[in-house]
Image (cartoon, rainbow, N blue to C red; front, side, top):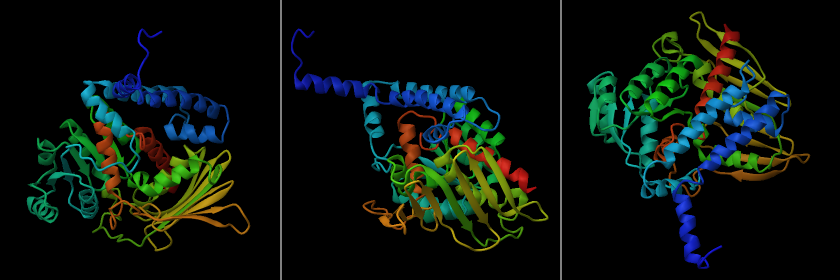
Length: 435
């Protein structure tokens, strides 16, 4: 077959060339094809691993949607992403292929992206501190007045301060906009940034409802920019480690999830939590974490039952929600009217995992087996070997955006648009039962 027998050096060169040409990213396309077959099994009433995998890729809906249509949309996005990866010369593609093989925590290699922050409130401050610790580069901040923007810029050593959101989005020295305003404004501000050609990281909840999110994703697709929901829990080393243990069968098939998220917050109209004009309410602020966790691990629920308290202004103060699946369930409890526990448990056939409070942060967890009484078999601690002690964990979503953009993607494989939409659709259904 060979005129000259291939030497080890020739084989190594050929392997490197194939890697540089982006062969490995096409594995994701094959995975979507496999997931489509799993989704068809789910549509026929099968559960177990078929349900979990189809739920992960957002292919199957229990809300009168055609799984084939969902597959076409998701596969089309996947195929488009892989074509982006293959663009350019080998010299440009090879580094991206190398980064794609790194672990979820990855290296902190800088991409050169310049970040702007839209909003100068509390959550923006937490994000800026965490992201700067990870080496994220901020070049501008935009607030409703220049004085507030300047104070934020001075605090975090950011070069430019804009007195309007429009000026921030128009700044040619900004590549990515992080939106850190109340949920009521997320959609319009994301569209503003997208129209300016910026990549966007949007605080959770992504938008107030699924319909608004669809408009944002459609605009991003049209503009060819990257958009990601800042569901920071999804990207922490804690949840990466939890998903790894579930994937390798450490606790068997997941059968039940319980979450508790209770805080006594300011419910006056002076604060955002109790103001309906700012989309205040426990569902979008606290419940989104619980829905995101349940749908990440179990997929789209077959049934949703919600009950809770709503004040005279129409703001939901708290709720208990049951998500039903053919052979599993999730019980979600959240309130902003009273204090309480803030932990979560994931239970399987062969053991269970307890996430310490607050379960949605970069936290510790313990894994127990199925013996009687249950035996502690693993204690996982955050910050180990990370070099980022003391951070809350909001930097990992920024690092995920930078990795994805460097790979030429328009959505994250860890938090694809279909997942954001599925969570919002489930919360829309729960909200309808609270009114």
